[in-house]
Image (cartoon, rainbow, N blue to C red; front, side):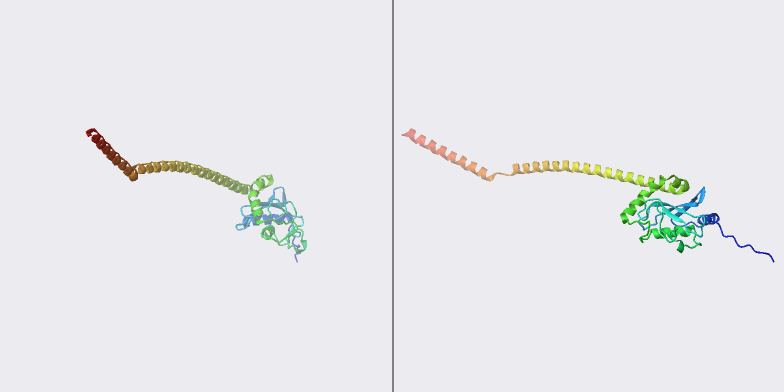
Length: 253
């Protein structure tokens, strides 16, 4: 009867390789992960902020540090990019982290851990290593995360495709800002020119109106003045006739 050897439990390294191949075959939504080339027990991940969340548009870099006893012991979880949900460079207290080895399940893989991390990130439940910020602050962190991550040499080395995506977003944002500034400048110029034209038109209209009023004034007959002049003229004529008559009578006498 042939003797059967007990099945050897997978080591941490072999399990890591299996998880890596699984992630390449079935990528996780919003998440990318890569181990260090020289240390498969240290993984780096990038969480892309999901739509309809304060994290949308942001890229969040962190690490998973696995013990050699993995999968029988859980990893440590860190967030490196400022995000408004977790402290940076601080071990996070999650049910899937080494803070809770009693709740750890050896069947959980790297994909399970990262999916749980994203789920907890989108919640507001407080825990050791979490912080409280406003929605506005989270959106601000999301915008700043692009340039922040590009400064990290490990991020650039492990995630070149993500870096290309971020650079494209930054370039698009730069072009939109330039277009917006150009549009604002054009509107400013257009607002000045019509104002000058309107002022000139207003002055011209006032001059025309003044000339029209003067012409109307001149065209109106001053009837009272004319009547007075006529009366004066008739009275003077009558007076002259009377004087002439008196002089003639004196001469006859």
